[in-house]
Length: 256
Image 1 (cartoon, helix red, strand yellow):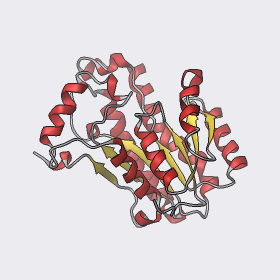
Image 2 (image 1 turned 180 degrees about the vertical axis):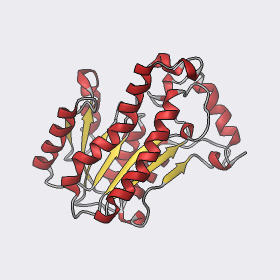
Image 3 (image 1 turned 30 degrees about the vertical axis):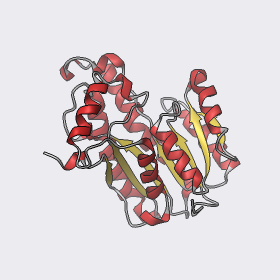
Image 4 (image 1 turned 90 degrees about the vertical axis):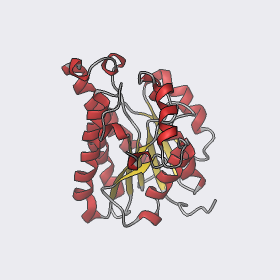
């Protein structure tokens, strides 16, 4: 692959395992020459992320819990020391308690609602604010991952759908704020892929088969296709695109 991202740097937040969409995105960007940093949440995920990062030349691994502002600040201080500048932020973080994804949405607790929004939506704003000093003059790109549950009612998605709607609205407001600095902010709304986070959605395996039958392409997308869309949004070929939700879902969103 052409290394058109050579001398570019990026940070990837949200890799959980080799099936993560974040990992597919990271591989696409790394193959194009970008040097990457990966974050992990807690001791449980550290080894997995380090083992994966070992496959990416010259990458580094740093801790970051986005519910702890001091860890977000420390992350970008470390990135300044290691990279000096930053071109891309991939925000692939989302979380809701499993019990909040069961039953009717109106049973959502205040605690569960706020937690889902803090991790899945507000963290994009917090991470963006911390990244800005490293992105000055770089005409960089911030990319996050969303899902059609932000637009439509998806059974079992519940509070995550509300959080993703807030995330997509955040993309638009951040894009307007950062446009004068030449920094673009976009989201990818990916079709269903078998990932760790998707396993928390009730009847996911049944739904993924139903979606495949209803897409324009009559199939589901792959993690690699999402990764290549992220590569596009991270690089110069998308330099005129910001504030956009790019659907990578085999055309499911256009179907009635």
